[in-house]
Amino acid sequence: SYELTQPPSVSVSPGQTASITCSGDNLGNKYACWYQQKPGQSPVLVIYQDNKRPSGIPERFSGSNSGNTATLTISGTQAMDEADYYCQAWDSSTPYVFGTGTKVTVL
Amino acid sequence: QVRLVQSGAEVKKPGASVKVSCKASGYTFTNSAMHWVRQAPGQRLEWLGWINAGNGNTEYSQKFQDRVIITRDTSASTAYMELSSLRSEDTAVYYCARPSLAVAGHFEYWGQGTLVTVSS
Image (spheres, rainbow over the protein chains, first blue to last red):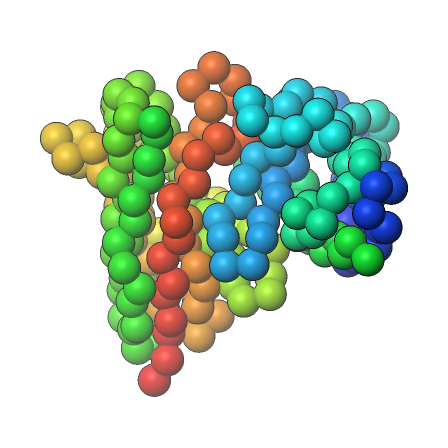
């Protein structure tokens, strides 16, 4: 089965840039999206189709996907961005698969 | 606005079944699909399957296809997920999630989650 791997944790200082990677075989040939999940809450979509932001998501969230790696970048990280982040991949032949999750800590 | 409201927490014994509901509002229920995703404590999200709310067709994850049934009631704009032969490892929060109407591959809206606890 298809696997997506993320680093368990990323630490960032307020105002700095956080980058979260998601690795999977030929991930660049699939659509990648990202969810933010705060404790006790449902996931929230922050990036879809590799690099598109849903309405209401701040511009500091951006995404890319190429080769075997998708990346979520949070520019000018704020305390409110502290959360778990999950990548997810999809194409017509791959059922919905989620990454292992990354805890972002804003120090 | 789109809302997905799920049924309340459940406690079940091993071997039992559980049925979770998800009532949709704010859009035409039969124009979309409903997926079910679960999250065990401290674990990643895990996809169980989905139903085409229009024609009732379903697709399940290979891991769960022998134990999960997803149905819908169009008159009530409600989707259901039933998981049978429960074991302790099925203790998790179960979410319904609606995909985008325009673009496939991601979930735009999520229910609030239903905690299912399996314990003897």
